[in-house]
Length: 389
Image 1 (cartoon, rainbow, N blue to C red):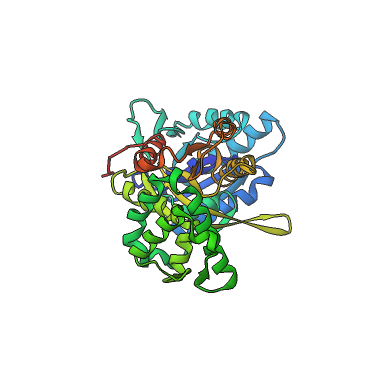
Image 2: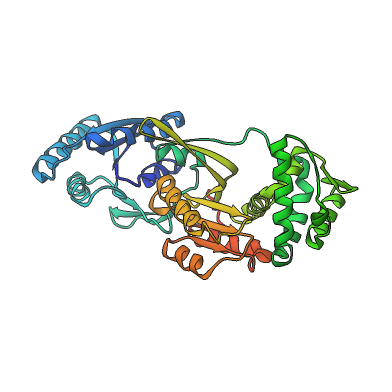
């Protein structure tokens, strides 16, 4: 039986991804941690036990008392030796004094020791010498990733976009490529679609002024030609709720998701993808909900894409700080986030996003969205076009 041992810290994803690497054939994972990390251990167990891996929490003192920590880990090592298990130590995680103490002990037992390098996601052997590095397979999904960080998620049960499948790419690309010209018209279209939602109907009457908007007229022509609406005598009628949502600003996130789906067929490090993920986190007595417009896992790293069709003149900082916070809370140190904005970005927003480590795609880049997204995913590292044997 292969037993892996690792130390829990605030970013324990690499303890899990290594176990899902098929070449390891791991059967049990022992998580070393202090008392306050039991909840983290429970989240890790929720991910691993359904996959047939046994888990155990081995508690060590929380005090910075090296002799005492060493004594406890020596007890664990001796127990493993007596069991006859094939033992591996994953040295990827853990506070330094705990990690170095554990490393020293496991090294004396001549058990294999490895780390998962954060950027490349390669499995690198520290001991014994002469073993070749290898890419960790990409098997963790969005739900598992969020569970590790104490969140639960709901993935959409049905795809309302299915009735618009042939429209999303063509119309999405057309609108995205003409962001500056169509911006004012899309703002009005969004208002009309919102009015329908509030009144729980699919038709809305345009004012005389709205009927004279050139850009809005271009958009209505596009919707009519695509069969998503009917416009006559100043009344706009959407063909379905999906069509109304498309016009209500969701067209951008649907289009982004569609492009990522295309890239997924070309870039094998994209391992999971979902649209409109509802995420719930428990904060004290209340549950906080967030929605991820587009979420994907690339090279075992969570990627979050926020899509915005409205301008950010008043709430730019709030949008960026919220995106940074969600990235860090739900994905740990290796997670990445991007804002895709249909409206022009202020220099202040661009600078702030850079400071926060967020990627940006603005209206100038939307016409070549696939190229920019592809480059961003490549920057997540990993075996770009390899498949595992």
